[in-house]
Amino acid sequence: QVSFGPRVPGTDAHKQCADYLVSSLRSYCDTAFIQVGEMPSKNGSVAINNVIGSFNPEATKRVLLMAHWDTRPQADEDPSRPTEPADGANDGASGVGVLLETARQLQQQRPDEGVDILFFDAEDMGDRQGKPETWCLGSQYWAKNKHKENYVARFGILLDMVAPENPTFAIEGYSWQYAQPYVKKVWKAANDLGYGDIFVNNLGSSLIDDHVFINQIAGIPSLDIIHYDNSSSGFGEFWHTHDDNMESISKITLKAVGETVFKVVKEF
Ligand code: AHN
Ligand code: ZN
Image (cartoon, rainbow, N blue to C red; front, side):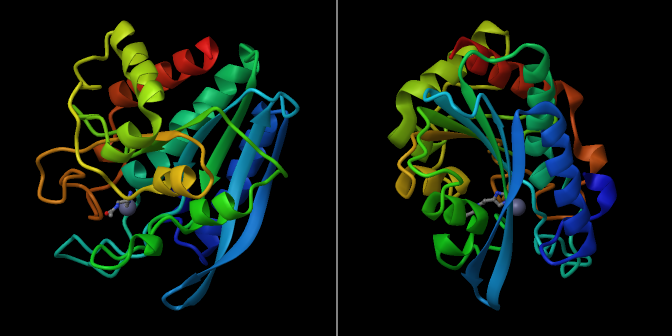
């Protein structure tokens, strides 16, 4: 994903990456396609390309696995070159990477129930000083236009920035508010696998992210696994800077998150 270049909506790299994601999901899942839409934004409107892959599409008992795949148009937390986009290895690629591998594993060890993998577009065009609705455009679109009529899932897991070295996955506030039983399930699975040092049992901040709209608009109880620490932004020193590149990626962290998600899905 990262080698396509920054996946900024409207660019060639973005288009090429969408094709790569849908063909990857098509090779692992029973069905995969791109949901195309449009959302209003501050500069008019943005085209939305949400990439969706499903296992057991007819099963009524379903779990939703989510990550955003777009890259922020500008690394605006970086004092140098703040108008150019970063590689987005952590922010954008990490959650998608974990879920691509989850899909590959699920092809080999088939789930009993339904699993949907959703890669949301245009999450990262928001304004920190602006309204929450400036973020998460792809998930807002999906929440209002689900890919199947009467679609329901028991719960959802969102992955965002799941590759820092020595991460802290505190319990995110909206996740606790809307999806408490599932937070307990996920954090217990992590603990059972020996990842209790990173899936810490502290209630952290409430963060605007795709799961907020999935909870509030789609009504699917959803939690966010997201790195949050004592750095100035809260999201780590790499966040929205040019340090968000492949060198900031920890395989150990990716493995911990992937194994945790896989265990929850298999036990569902
Ligand atoms: C806010 O800064 C309000 N939310 C962060 C959502 C985000 C941006 N996730 C990745 N990049
Ligand atoms: Zn971001």
